[in-house]
Structure formats: C-alpha cells, structure tokens
Length: 128
View (spheres, rainbow, N blue to C red):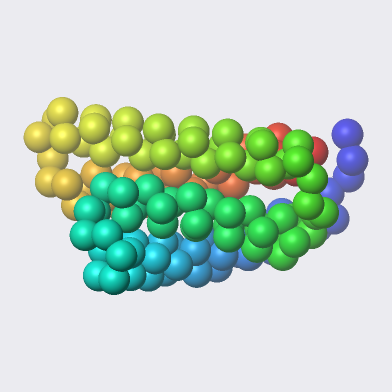
C-alpha cells in the first residue's frame, strides 16, 4: 500500500467538488440547448447531456483531480462508477419518495450521499 502525501486526498476531494460543479453546469447547458435548438424531448436531451458530462468529467478528473493519465481501463471504471452513482441517486431519491418526504429532501440526500461515495470509488478503484 502506498503512503499518502498529507493533504493530497483533501486536495483531490476539493478538485473533485469543483469539477462536479462545472460538469453539472455543462449538463444543464447541454440539456437546455438540445431542448431549445435541436430536439424538444427532455429525456433524450438529458441522456445526451449525461453522456457529454460524463466524458467531460472523466477528462477533468483524470488530469486535474487525480493527476492521472488517460487509459481505457480508467475510462471503463469511471463509467462504471458513474453508472453506480446514477443508480445510487435513483435509489436514494426513491427511498425519500417512499417515505413520503419532499422531493427536495431526496435531492439534498442525493447531493450529500452520491458525490462522497463516487469520490471514494474513484480514488480507490478507478485510478488505482
């Protein structure tokens, strides 16, 4: 097991957070643009936006957050973690809905649960 440089994991987490905010903005921009200018179907527009945001997230996080190089193995793992994050988000929000809570509580729970889980998965699996 390699020794961790003090503060490195915290720095990665900060960069992961910043890239997440940027990529979320990209997702919104792409989805809104597709709906407005190309195809007025929100489901398909968000699908296109999700794929675009996932690729951008891989590029940013690989080079900036985790200081790694592009490899097919890490891209595959990144996509698997993104899919797991999507399923986790659906599960968390579905659980909140099952308890009859406001969808805002579900969104807050997703924001509090999914990014830390995906960060840990990326740092311990995707980029190892």
